[in-house]
Image 1 (cartoon, rainbow, N blue to C red):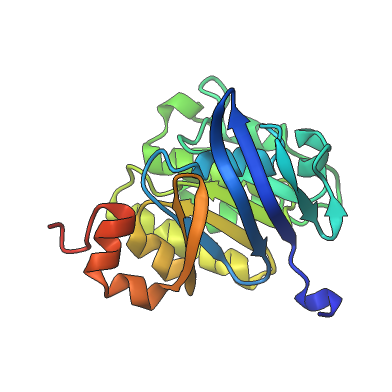
Image 2: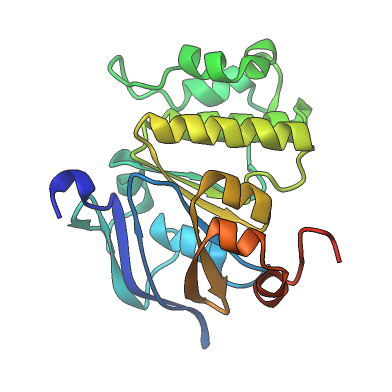
Amino acid sequence: MDAQDSPVLSASNVDLHYGSVHILQGISIDIGALPRAIIGRNGMGKTSLCRAIMGLLPLSGGNINLNGVAIDHRAPDWRARHGLAYVPQGRRVFPTLTVDEHFRIMQRGKNQQWTRERIYDIFPRLAERRSNFGNRLSGGEQQMLAIGRALMMDPRLLILDEPTEGLAPVIVDHVVEILQQLSTEGIAILLVEQNLSVAAELADELSIMVNGQIIDHIPSSQLLHDETMQRRYLGISLDGH
């Protein structure tokens, strides 16, 4: 495998405990040029995996490499400076900062690729709302802000935890379009989702997480058309029955 084909991030046999509870159990996954989506029900460990990758939770076993460098014992801020950006579930914007202030505090220097102007170009609604406080934005606007804030880190890998949760369908479509665009611009993407349609639209292959383990990697088209698998892994089917 040459450098161009090497994964941006590689997790191998990752274990994570909360006290005596074994949350992540031997997770192994590579994330490279193509978007990667992990799908599963609530409580399966998806958010814990995101937080472990970012260094917000300590591993109890296994290792994580970023661009071939072991980062198991690196602090979250080091990981952020070296190419990881995280869009957490629930957006977590600052309620008393304006949109523009969110971006200003993330500015890194004159040579950064992602600037406020560039983010306003892809999220024109945020440009219109740049003077509004975080708690005065709609759910969709807050999600755009959370993604834009992460992009200000010039990420090599963008990790998104349930980015379409609670959003109107038209906003969901816009978020998916933006993520597809970012992927073509060389940003690796790890998407954690419960929404099968969203995950399948972004990624050609889905990783299924059940009880802290990735139990299978399935072509998106296969899971989209197999209601038995949808009920088994997700507890739902796309027809709503």
